[in-house]
Length: 104
Image 1 (cartoon, helix red, strand yellow):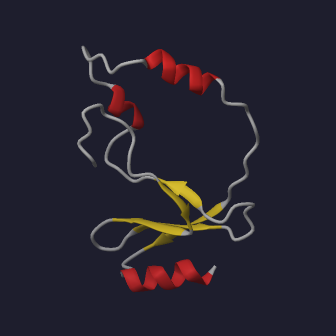
Image 2 (cartoon, rainbow, N blue to C red; image 1 turned 90 degrees about the vertical axis):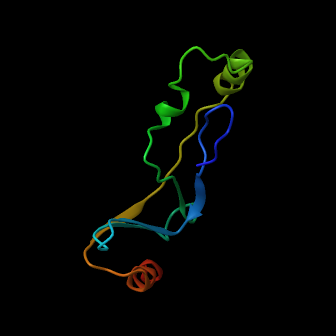
């Protein structure tokens, strides 16, 4: 996490082909991007915070929020298609996860 003056989202990764979310013993989930996606890879962030936590502070004026909302409200809706596999892993070391991520 970067200690910005104004809390904001950070750490998002794009075009991720595989990612593992595990505990210290290598047990968890391996997310693998479906190679048949329109775009290769997916986006992800893994942090011990909710997105809402970044704007949860009170009694702070962070500036021209109305300008941010004008940009957000101008976004046109469109369809996206993503797919990925979730593979449960247990007692798997990093090298094994890399091999499995490249397998698909």
